[in-house]
Image (cartoon, rainbow, N blue to C red; front, side, top):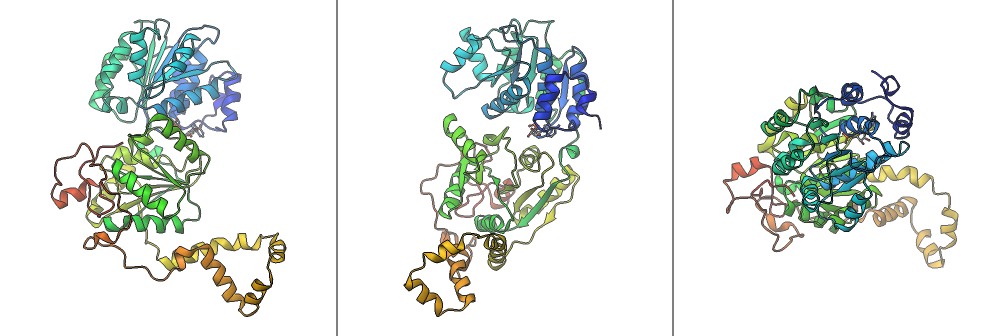
Length: 489
Ligand code: AMP
């Protein structure tokens, strides 16, 4: 494998790459960098998110720009504000020493800062197509000096309905002097049409899906009834050595209900879905990055471009029918050589999806055994042992014990004292046996019922027949009934 030093990269950028901790180029970087650093060309890169594609275009983009020119020289178009923010942040980090920075421009935010930023003539604008078009129409953004356009996640932009905006933007770029680099996870017919129309003799590279999956990622599935999924999720989170993860749901209402359920069980949980405004999303993302929130429940669209280090688990409340979504989801974990688990809950009737995933990822999925409450309890108590041994300040705690405490302790065995403290620490594990787990026949056992939950949009007026509903992989979390539609956040 080539090193970054062997590529034609300037010293300031090599320093920035080193600062990010990148040692060797990822497969897409190894293939794209020699082409994009090599000279002026259009480019088509087929690579999913999580492959290192951002640096694959950000490095040559920064090399190409002149920071002394006060005009927009490059524009990067992204499907979501989260991705736009993330890409602009990465350009800022990589371009800092060279003096190249990016201005993020996206919908849902005020115009004031964006207008001020544009007046300063940033070298790079990274934005979502809709808001970029707004600025073009207002005349606050000029593209006459643009010499590089990057279309990031082009397939997503097209499937989200941005095709017209893309065409409008690309139509304003002066012909002849500009290169277009298109990155896409898939070569959908829409992407093919845009590529045919706007790329001139592009050089093309492709990173195979199997290369995308890191060896440190383990895919596990658990067979369970729809109605037991919330309980199973909790057991899996509690039985894990460490848990810092994302739970993906198919619908907004499921995201809201599950978050409420987990909050009721005292998890440090929050959610992301399409109905939240930008500032609410950013707040949630910050809490998740700061690990104040350890469990993030979200829809696929709301999680686009979500790049957080150290995620230990991705949990699929159900396997999505679109395999691209599955790949996108599991790419949130096992990053940068760290280990990670992609866990999927599968109803017996959805077993067929496992074979589809195995075929697409060319990797075997492991069937996991749902831990019993006792096993979860043993794991938790076991995990506590090291912490127990490391309590150096216990003597200070003993000083606080008044005669009442001392009397109580004197009459009890060491085992009993330890047991009582464990009950205090983990009341949920040692509580008296709970009512039997909810079944489809007994849907009302669930205590957390969000009354008046909004119907899931994009669906049909009534539930499709049961078999069809189950295959859709959605799900009404409260009743155990699968959901209507699969529209994401
Ligand atoms: P991306 O596909 O651009 O979203 O990148 C996925 C993740 O891989 C991000 O967290 C990057 O910081 C990280 N990354 C990108 N390139 C490398 C590299 N060469 N070595 C290690 N990590 C990388």
